[in-house]
Image (cartoon, rainbow, N blue to C red; front, side, top):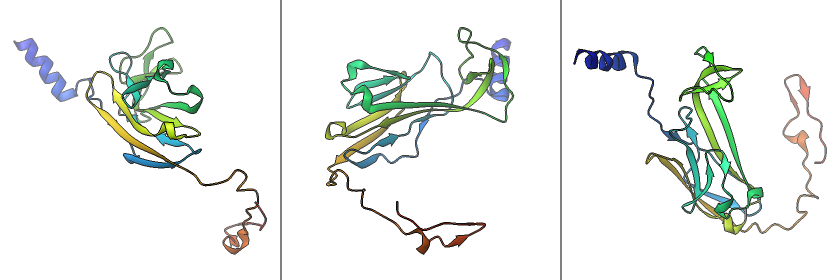
Length: 190
């Protein structure tokens, strides 16, 4: 009984290593994008995870990515989708321990230069390129073994623009950007 009390007290005072996982985004839940353009759906995890939990991307309830692995069975064109995966380490905390490709760090840490560094966040941003009408639908980013999820509704609109529309566009920069600070912007055609 005393040992259990000591462990509980240790967890309360020193805040046990287990960190509750949650997802965040700066994106809106509903996006309208023009056909042929791209969309970014941001999904940030508040720490790093290894095996116990993975982040999954789904389109209309069909998995597209399991962690960073693209799933061919999703029916989504692999050339039109990209997962930007980035890990940000906590710069205020010192890296400790040693690690390698075979000897990984614990959850909440990431291997950087063979040292375990505490994570600030892990980014799983889904990029949809050259959008078509088939790309419209409901996209979800979720933690595999928890109910935590972010949901995005994507609508793709017809562009109405003809090919080569930008070839005859010019802009005179001199009207807005005469002389600023120590440099001058020259006028010209784009």
